[in-house]
Image 1 (cartoon, rainbow, N blue to C red):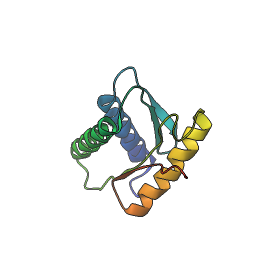
Image 2 (cartoon, helix red, strand yellow; image 1 turned 90 degrees about the horizontal axis):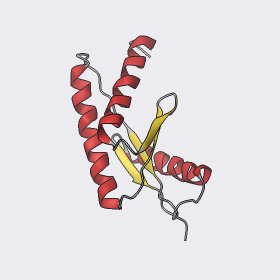
Image 3 (tube, rainbow, N blue to C red; image 1 turned 135 degrees about the vertical axis):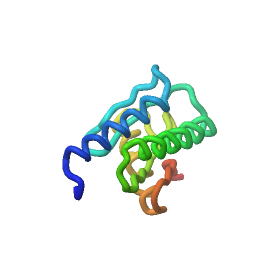
Image 4 (cartoon, rainbow, N blue to C red; image 1 turned 60 degrees about the vertical axis):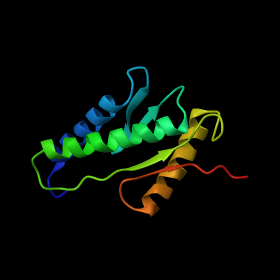
Length: 118
């Protein structure tokens, strides 16, 4: 907010580029609204998801440096898995949103998986 809407738009574009560079072309990814993005990734396991998140966070740091402005960009990531955490987009999104708030509670630059109730 302090740097204006134009700068905010630039940051959103940088985040989108990081997502595009991190995930495969066949993965569905997009901006959900505001500063929220969604990626639907098929045929990956948990270690592969963790590797993708590390690569995304590394890309984000690199993109921060290219903006040539002294600021700190952090991210929080919520992860849900099909079919464990939901069988519809709405269920998966709700589970990922719950995981997102858990990640935010853990501090900056965190990713959290949804913990299915027993």
